Image 1 (cartoon, rainbow, N blue to C red):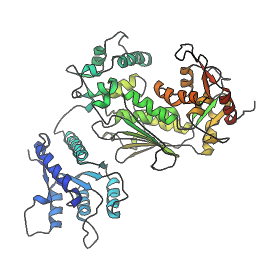
Image 2 (image 1 turned 90 degrees about the vertical axis):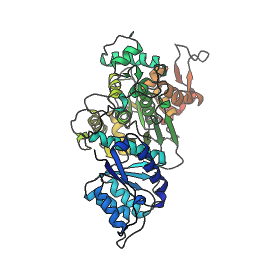
Image 3 (image 1 turned 135 degrees about the vertical axis):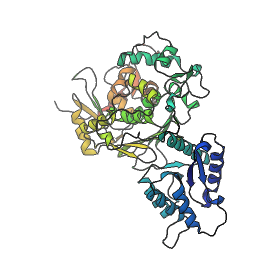
Image 4 (image 1 turned 120 degrees about the vertical axis):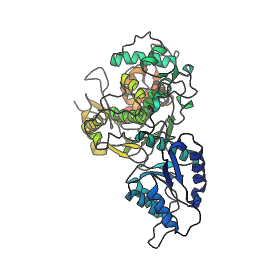
Length: 510
């Protein structure tokens, strides 16, 4: 079989180390060298031809155009166009398969014409950014293997079905699997009995490969999943403005299983957005309404965790701004889906099917591809703009937050009599998680009741981010302070808490 030819663009000095490293890597990798040959301008012998003619002729001969875009634009011809720009345009006109890698995340130092070229490429295809040569090599490897799979030149199962290198059954958490089994039985009628062994559970879920745990098994039930897949974490950041800016007021990197990641990331967002709390007059539970429905936040984050590309060095990023929530994951849509189809009825095409199935069984996701449409519906019902879906360096979901006028709409939607609002600065008191606890507590309540009232799932996060700060600040107290771990323990507002609550609670005339 004739090797596929890769044209590696740019003779700019800033990429000399990367070009050499790519050449050496493609020569040395036993898989890629079977299928690919490549062109480097440095390897062309002296000839009576202009360099521009050589560039464009080689682009025409190649199967894949690999563009390396950095800060420099390069030498400009009489028309003000650089060789790199000519190469990209020529590859586009010839409908070549194009792979574009952009060095660095900061665009401030880029030549204006290079920035325009990057934006031009971004409007046509998915670019990948890299910071180091190793990241470039890893990204190129994943892209070329994906290309071979698309061309049916090689066949392989999904990443989550492959055995996790160096992982053993002892690296899986028995208690996590037992907890999942109980939850799946309650939520979906999972057929295995509660006394089923861990091996029986893993076998039933197809999470073993010749007795070894797969990537999916480690992601779902691993004691320390990030030990084997470093980037399988979620980075959460909260910005007071509408742009990424330092210092970051609140930044967390969450690790753990996919269940932990979802719970912690969702709770992070819910602790930062506005909350409306009602009374118990309409029932035994305190009615709660967030400016963005919890179901919408959860779906966006679960989508990112479940369907991301786990071969990427990138991590899921959850960024909360003053006007929006952005959830980014290093992945893309399957060939059968488009951005437009996400808004229409469509089938479920999970990127990691063995990860997605247990998330479905634990009722984190649905199986029928309804997630994005549910998000749209719930946003409409809450008076929010429809979520935005986009592809750039990955798949991004953007959820717009409420303005002041829309916030009143949420207040009207809370079931029961609305008695309080936490939405920025009320009566001179800054909103925050302590105030959220203060408004949620009515009378004496268990820890689980307060957590449920706030719609939070992760116990450790609730304790560290909500309960303990409220206790330390003196707004909350234990009913049995001498026995903090007592099963009969309850929590109530102190005089200080009651006084502060009176300042922020808005009376609702009967």
